[in-house]
Length: 147
Image 1: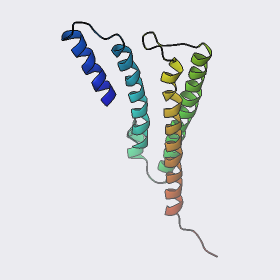
Image 2: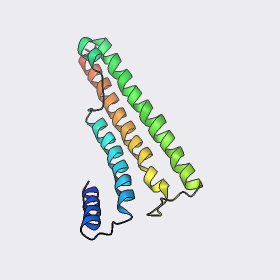
Image 3: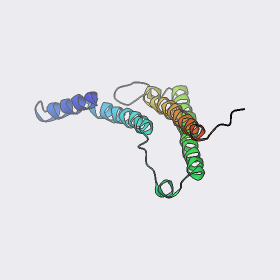
Image 4: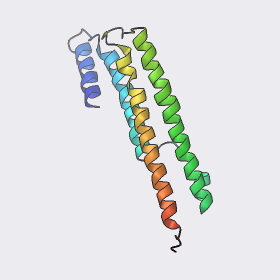
């Protein structure tokens, strides 16, 4: 976030005060926004604040709530693994294979895109943590018969 603020501040200063806008700031702002958004998505997933429709969660109780939570955590893990890690890794691989570079900064686009699978890995790990917590909480609620 600090990089974005400094970058945009420099863009405004160079454009309006110096009269010669910096050429790299637009691209750097775009790429830092991508990184911030993806890391923010992983963070929000860790806070369990991701977009949710909780009409069912509020109405369901007991064992069905446990199964619904398993389904929700499973879908988050599926999305993180298949779309973010799988698709993001493919995007990084293709951009590296084609040796794509950004127009102004001339950095490999695979460096920019690597945040997609990285954030996906974080989402998947956090999903497994919440899944295991749900399961352990459900097992803790049951009374275990001792012989």
